[in-house]
Length: 457
Image (cartoon, rainbow, N blue to C red; front, side, top):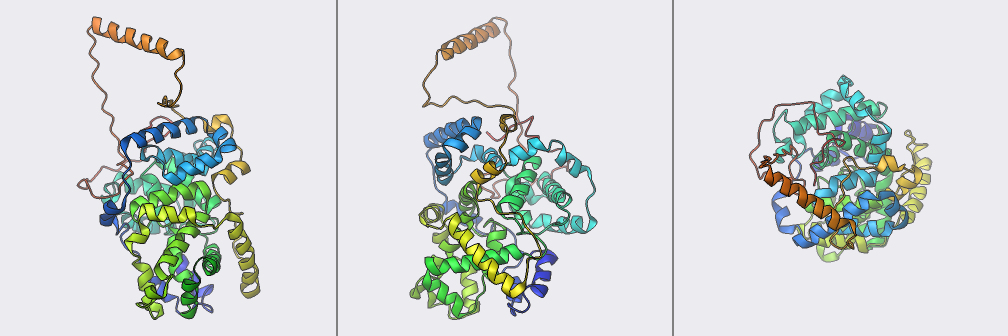
């Protein structure tokens, strides 16, 4: 499913345990992303514009004092991520949550250096073949050689140069594509680095051992969350790697409706991998969690088909978010089960081939492990928006008077300033649907620089 790496894993790591692993490739083929776009408009939550503007003001306030909020009011940050980050600020929020902003500031010109290198021909060839498969109905990626595909290539190629021992895995492409819908290429690169190294370490390594371990953790947690579903999967010997590999490696970006993908990512980048476990557990519980639902799937093949076509009502944004928040699966539960599964793995397979760094459970853990400086968190340009809820200061009338005086001077001098037209090459991140006709865009290596332009408000 994911390049030659998964074939190697099928042949070497899982040959003895999963004799029918070819079912994995048959049941989860490489297919056009976002097959649920048409259903998405029916399941997305509508937020009143007044509420949205209020949330934007709150998020701007948090981003302008990010270190203080994370240190003293992390619970409030988490609650606001659970409610959903405003679309206009989602890219910037993801950059801060993951620590990508700090990485970018501490490694200035690193991305440009990697971007200017030719790359390993082996990975370049595979990446180029994968570009057209990522969200083909999104205007940004529809045109071959368009700016979206070019930036996607740049980000993925840069990662293979940044981590040559890991290289490229196909599951990274949809992750990078989602990021590019919300931010420039350089920012997307650093967020991808953080996801691969901090949130999901080892997921994209050659042997895919980390994803196999997490599959066993998911299976063990399911016993507590839904005994009926657990017994059914055990009865038919349906190994976790057969149904959860794409879910976790792509962070559900190829599984859920778009509104649900964004809501899940908001929580995932704030709270860590436990959100992916919760999503998987919710889907398994409501798809296989009762005898009535199991009447139609009496074998392994029927069960796989059911998991490939999960009912929309279980993936609807509001329902899924509520169930994720309500499910009591913590970082401690995951780590406890991780140690248990790691002992079993060593007994049956020996030591892990890939020594991945410890997993960090969310934004707070990342910031604690790598404390940023105020300069690293400084927004460029710094945007300060007065919250309608904030008390007025004495400076505001004086500022208003100065602005009024400037306006009067312009009128007296008959100065007519033509409005600037700002062209945003990135489509709205709220809905990757084919609302506009695909345009063939002349390719360019120049991407928006987050330090000079801010087109995401």
